[in-house]
Length: 461
Image (tube, rainbow, N blue to C red; front, top):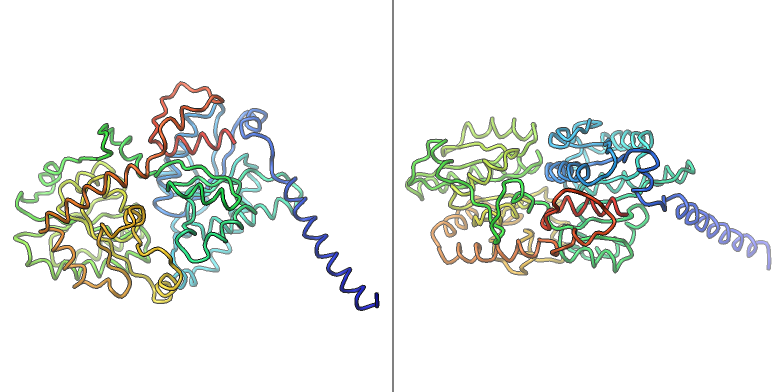
């Protein structure tokens, strides 16, 4: 072996040695003790939780409430969240809205702030010394945070807390996406999945996962709806009376989104759509739903002053008012997102719309392997809900779809009938919670409560 060959050999050996050393350090740095044992030793359960979206704030707040009810130890939280999580006692490191950005081009202006907030969040987690770290959706920020936090623990030679991620990323929807799931095991120990097929995909790719059910179904529990069909019926007549809406008026619910970027893009399109529809009905009234995001609220409040039709604004922070307005509506026009499931619960026929920056749209068109964007259509594998996407999302196209859905009873009945199937698919298996033999609790644990199943999974890990 000449000098050059020996140099290459030792260089390769050194690289493998470094990789092996990293893997060994990583395997020994992750806590192998059950969460309950760690909490018992310290006399409290410390959870560092991060949410970056309005939907994540709802999920996070319900998880916090459920964990407190189930835990035999006092629970202390730290991290990042929104208004609802603050009501559960979380003192957020910074406003959740600061990391609520979706898309590729849309993210670029915020990169420097993201780096600062990422560093701040990692440092806060290390100082808090949590037994559990839970991130909720927002994979762009969440995954970087979990990855850097684990790397810091390995670098400092300290035991890493167990990492949970609530809401599996939809890698299954993208070409080559399942291969990316394998990489999650480097910094995520368990995924809490909200779609029925995701847990199996995660397990096949080497990462522990549990299907906990879709969190939106908890609206039924919160509003004390007992119907076996999984339907929420608000008092539509009461809503009309409260807002002075005549009985013969056609009411359309508009849901432009929860992020500032998508609302500023979608609301003008919705406004122009209403301009085209205002003469199609005897009297048209729109109900604009505002996500609990101050930036979004400020923007919508100013924008609707110039609308061509009467507007009633409804706060997304009030589930009761939201479902009452749904019941008062003939149809809904919504930006693609979690709200599509809420409309299924309300059995309100809808049209789904979506626009983004041209670069983001190009990536979606070239990389997506599912033909639909709305969750009900993906689950049913059919275009039950009409979708207007990308360059096809125009006021004239939306007006045509909405007009047809208002007048065509057959299309309406198809959506309403399909909604029951969607809700059934999103519900966790019966008895999932009650199968536990390791947790003593006096609280009733409804099978349909996603947050309870998620909290129980974390406690028993």
